[in-house]
Amino acid sequence: MGAPLEVAITNTSQNAQQFQWFVNGELQPNPFTSFVADTSGSYQITLVTWKNDLSCADTAQLTVIAYDSLIVGIPNVFSPNNDGVNDHFSITVNQPVKCELVIVNRWGEKVYSYSGNLTVGMNDLWSADATVSDGVYFYSVKMETSPPPLSPSKGGNPHQLSREGFVTVVR
Image 1 (cartoon, rainbow, N blue to C red):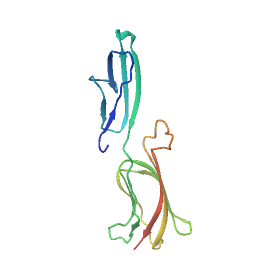
Image 2 (cartoon, rainbow, N blue to C red):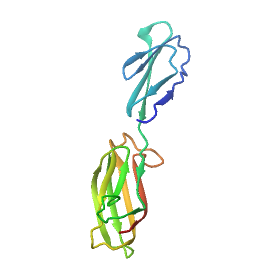
Image 3 (cartoon, one colour):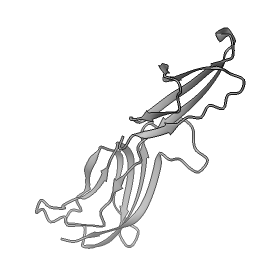
Image 4 (cartoon, rainbow, N blue to C red):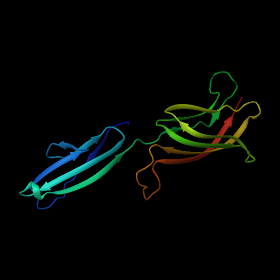
């Protein structure tokens, strides 16, 4: 994960006098008002409250899911002239993703497609062999981070990304 994420906790218990907080099963010191999620993953927050007798306690739980944002670098030009510099259409990602890429020419004819996994860093994909002429090509890419979400969000799936754009081949 990039910068750690500080998660604020608010206790809204009523009529309780004693509290025990747990993060992933580990007892936390009181007062407990926040914790730092320093790695991607799920964090189980548990609050146990009681007034006079621990045997008459109430428990509340919440799962916090922290994950890195997906950062993707897609070029708008490359030069497949075998000089060892910028010879491939490469996609750079900051975390592993599943990827589906389609590149078409100006008539909508598919000139390249890729379906598979991308690793962290630069992934050389399309080398545009000699049968591909200089010019502008359209790409469509769909990516999904792993693992898939535990439950879908209302505003779409934060673990999926779709982008479209143009790339120019210059020899």
